[in-house]
Length: 188
Image (cartoon, rainbow, N blue to C red; front, side, top):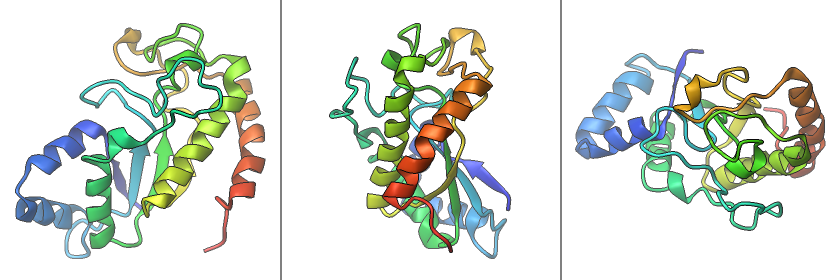
């Protein structure tokens, strides 16, 4: 399929349209009489295309993820996604993070830096919480990447994280049993 991404800034602009204008535009993009795009990438936290930088748990050291919340997505991102689901119920959603929470990185910043090996387990829990939170909102994430552009630094101007291939393999090995236990994997 062909698709697009749903950064927070784009959803913000879409929500500024009158409902009938937004419905017409989204129909032109995702509807069967329009482009009929069928794949959508949901950002796991903010990206370089967000109005401000955030993750779903910005509380330093919250290894139990007690402060995890997708509230940043509720005002604009989730309503746009739900509207798209009404237009195209067969949308295939996948997710990508631009950066883990800053406290999971060696530079304590969302911009640049490397994922800390000692935060890998909690980072995989962070993914599971995201998938579960979105599922509770009626949005099924069907695929994911561990990191958007895992070798990009962006000159420390936007959320990024260096994740080396060994870390990605380790994270996937930790994440797979957690996802299986939560029912993330299922046959269609």
